[in-house]
Image (cartoon, rainbow, N blue to C red):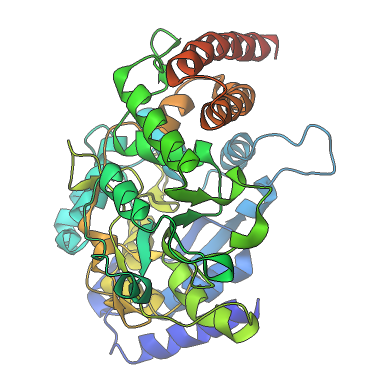
Length: 454
């Protein structure tokens, strides 16, 4: 809470220096006095982040903050419920003018015609939408079937962090932007058998398991797990076969080190922090963590590091399935206060608010390229180089079925078991795919049956 308070004060100071960029008299006169209902995490955070600043320029407008935390499941109950379902109930009960939605809920509401097309207001106000990352705008339009129903002030994505000192020490060329997954694994392979004992070095290190690494690869290649029209698994395909072989071979041959896949070997825990890994995939928050970690962890080391883009698919080298937005601000179609609601959405997504927000280390990236030029002295360009894929990823295709959550819970343990069997050479890739095809269809049927019983 103290951080929120500090952020609010910092933003107020910044706004006071802007000379009334938002407070033009013409804009104030356009807004009648009234109250708009706004979704946000909680009331205090809302006023610290946006409400107090907005009211400095639009004093006639009052807010009724719809607390999204009230939609969080009650974990003390056995049937805690689903956050998405609870959030929909909250929206139905309070009918907010301004909705704060994640990608999935935004797409649902856009297709149902429950959001207001803000394109006309953007044109009328000459709002500088071109300064927002074009890829993000197109992604949001794609979720609105071509119409622009909202704006996202920030996004998040991962990049490849690498230890320059290790590459230099072992005379290996550093990573480059837009490498393919095969190129990344080949680069990682070159660190095999480098160092001994406590000085053992691995190429690519991740603190998660083989199933998540596989998901990263297939997402970038737009490989789907399900045909949502026929409810058939698509895992028995050349694309899935190649991806599974690529990752399981790399883990078995120790070209890459996945912590969750090597649970009996704890010597490489947090290897990148400790200078024992040349590369790791992570988000913008990790840059701050690298600096802070050396302060409280004696095992962590300071070293020269840099970043490049996430690996890409050869068929789409300029795109990434790893770009996401968690906050899309939209105006309700049935809002009686569309003008005031739009002014708030515009305010949240303005250049000045992006500049102010970029001063905080919250793991989000401003949607406006150039606002956040560097993190800890390292250029942020790799975060912005790839545009988001507009087609469905593996997760999105799963999310398109009513039984997706149940299917995922049933299928993921099976997938992990079969992948580990390949790594342990207990079965071939082909045998594993045949097994996954059968067990996956069984899991899908069980999930559908369970949903029909509800």
